Amino acid sequence: MTRIVLLPGDGIGPEVTTQAHRILERAASLHGIPLDFEEGLIGGASIDAHGTPLTDAVVEQCRGAQAVLLGAVGGPRWDDLSVAIRPEKGLLRIRKELGLFANLRPASVFPALVAASSLRPEVVEGIDMLVVRELTGGLYFGEPRGIDRNGPERIGRNTMVYSDVEIERISRVAFEAAMRRRKQLCHMHKANVLDVSQLWVEVVEEVAKDFPEVTLDHQLIDSGAMLMVKDPRRFDVIVTTNMFGDIISDEAAMVTGSLGMLPSASLGAGGVGLYEPVHGSAPDIAGQDVANPLAAILSAAMLLEHSLDAAAAAASIRNAVSQVLEAGHRSADLILPGEDRAVTKCKAMGDLVLERLA
Ligand code: IPM
Ligand code: MG
Image 1: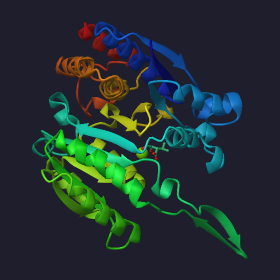
Image 2 (image 1 turned 120 degrees about the vertical axis):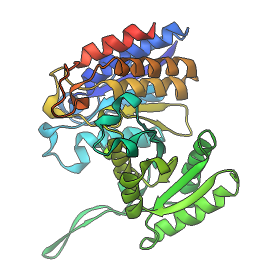
Image 3 (image 1 turned 135 degrees about the vertical axis):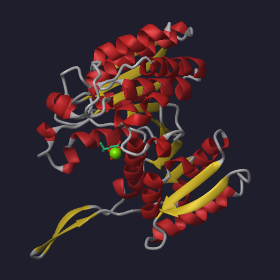
């Protein structure tokens, strides 16, 4: 049996993970892959139960699994805690502990949802990009960090630090992904200001020698962010740092119409992959059965593809989602202002996808 750990987390995490779990189980069994599920706590849920956003026991549980399917972490209840013990720390720790340095965030637009974007349809149609975000280094983890006193002053500090080894391995993931796609790679950086970005440019260029078929360009992150709303279709694969990738992947997601649709995969050198929707815990709508479970469901499809080598099962989930959207079903986040359409709730959306899987 292949072991999968579910970490539903906080806010809408549990409800979207429940739907993704049902669909993952069914799609896998239809393709002859028996899965064994275990559940663990992360984020605020773990703080409430154990006083820490991630216990060692859950880390070990994840290490022993083939893949982890995560919901979302965080919420106003835990906002007053210090950075060191906030729910988000649990997410950062599990990424680091499992060595998940490569975060793949595909952003493409479902034809049925072109109108949901705040950009004009002719700008949006056909968007199909993949943000490859470095996930275990850079500003998020660099030392020194913290808030110190210097006499009467307080000084806050984080450090953006990357070794050539870290840059090389994430670049390879990005070039390899580009080879499976349209063979275009855009490296986003800030080399006109940052030394660390200068090293990125150099190392990405070195790795490019191994991928002569891939067209590489380097784009400053600020103008890259601008181009992404101006002409998002120009992008195929984007590779960038942890911090820039955090920002640009939200932008990439939103130009496609809804953050509620975007899955992600976090992979490393080790065997375990972690899959999570790009959206957050949305505490304002938690527990009301109105969240959009499709990003979690599509994350389950990525899990099948990347961790279980089950591309056909993954495709069956994506097809089912497409069909549900084509049939006109929409969760609240996908309904345009003034549009007269019934809201499909979270569980009902799961039911619809499940029906179309068989
Ligand atoms: C993301 C999130 C996380 C991040 C937070 C919740 C720590 O924004 O996965 O993009 O910054 O990486
Ligand atoms: Mg983010």
